Amino acid sequence: MAEGLTWNVYDANTMTQADIYGEVLCKLGETNERIVGLSADLARSTKIGVFAARYPDRFFNAGIAEQNMFGMAAGLALSGLTPFVSTMAAFTTMRAAEQVRTDICYQNLDVKIIATHGGISFGQAGTTHHCTEDIAIMRSMANMTVIVPADGIECANAVVACLERPGPVYIRIGRGFEQACYSSDDYGFTIGKAVEITAGSDITLICCGITVLQAKEAARLLHESDGLSVRVINMHTIKPLDTEVILKAIAETRRIITFEDHNVYGGLGSAVSEVIAESGRACAFSRVGIPDCYSIVGYPEDLYNFYGLDTDGIVKKVREVMKRDFEEEENWEDGF
Amino acid sequence: MPLTEKEIKELSQHARQLRKDILDVTFWAGGAHVGGSLSMVEMLVLLYYKYLNIDPKNPSMADRDRFVLSKGHAGAGLAPLLARRGYFDFELIKSFNKFKSPFGMHLDKHKVTGLDASTGSLGHGLPMAVGLALGARRQSMAWRTWCLLGDGECNEGSVWEAAMAAAHYRVTNLVTLIDRNRFMVDGGTEQVMALEPFADKWRSFGFAVKEANGHSFAELSAAFDAAIAEASAPTVIIAHTVKGKGVDFMENDVRWHYGGLDSDMLEKAKRRIDA
Image (cartoon, rainbow over all chains, first blue to last red):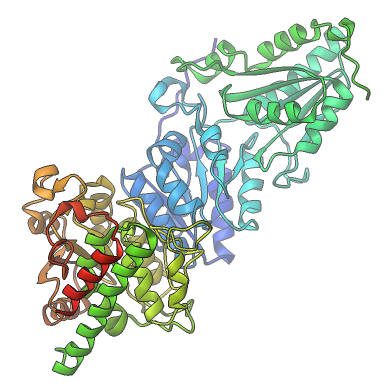
């Protein structure tokens, strides 16, 4: 079981990988005068407070009023600026969903949204502050790009990359305490292009966010204990989706499982399943996420374990899917 | 500077033309938000012919003043004015609401030249206008943002979130106009969801409040001038108007919030405008 975490909102600023986001934004702000920041009384928790402290004239705190904040961000973008907006994922994608859709996406404005506390990463806060719907909501909005970084370094890469991509971008991070998946930032991050974390030919695990690191570890364990060759894909961009990497996995491994900190409906698993279904090819497939229920309370580590999103859960799920001997069934060969 | 007699006469002619255009659009479209389009006519005419620094030949001119029609359902009132002002050919509006037309009842800035923002869903315009005003200030630009809201729209919480922010950030380069025609879809504003004491609400939110007869160019102009001169707080102008103004059988009749006209009614309504 997880030990109780001891930080609080005031010293969180000195501890986490998500600080990287704040620092990167500050650095970008040095040369890009167009960048402005917004938050809704969560500048500290979301790390955009680092930018606010460095550039007080370029930061607007909207108070606890997310609808107005996203409307203001749209107005700032209409005036020629590039707003970076940060608040919790739940309030971004649900409280202000219509403003994000109508004011920002419909007008195709250059607003970058870095939403924090995604999924069940704020486990102790309870269901109101969990957000297991955001990927589904955001990917259904035309013009929107949806990115779910695996760790702080990838978040930093995404923040840099999103500036080069005109139009709205939604970057979904956790509470900011994600363990490091990458040890350096030069692994070739490109929006819309998945990253192969480990090569493998027996089964493919397609992951995003915190599950990438867990799957990487699970792949290592499965190789040692079961002799399995497990491919792990970091699908950091949910939209536009890297369909090529999925089609390749269908052809080469014939088994795919998705893992995400999100409701199994509408997120990464749904996106991948759409590609599989439209491919016309047979594939053993399973989705793991929050099984269409309101998530329970607890420390994130315990919750990830409970929902099968940690290393143990992933190992178990892989063994289960590997037992589906679909190759022995009749007519599974479909000619490739 | 008070308007001259000659200016008022010219503006009145533009207003009469716009009213008839609104009726034509309503006829062509098979129905439009005619009541609330007719009530805002003098405000739009005064803005577009006298106050806004714009160049229809250069619609994206960097230092143009910005206008946000927060009551976006009144697109049938704004589209013909933009055409008359020279942003696009008036004939284009005949397609209003039709298949693949650039003009739907809520105007889209990607499709209609001269718009600074797409609007329609209520309560969105003022937050965007606050952002525009802050953006101008941040970039040391002198242009001003004008935002026109419906009174019923002020039921939306986001309007008051924006009002709070406008006062907090002292956005004096923003002028908020309210078309106080006292009607919404389901009935009178005071019956459906009371707004009064309306001016006091804005005052308590930190606004400088001006009131004017929304059909008097002289009163509106004085209020606009006062708003521009106001240097310590954001300004709201509550313009008292008549829904359906100018057409006797539409005035103050909630049924004309949205309606359609046949050719006989169209002619009858136009005669009232010219009377």
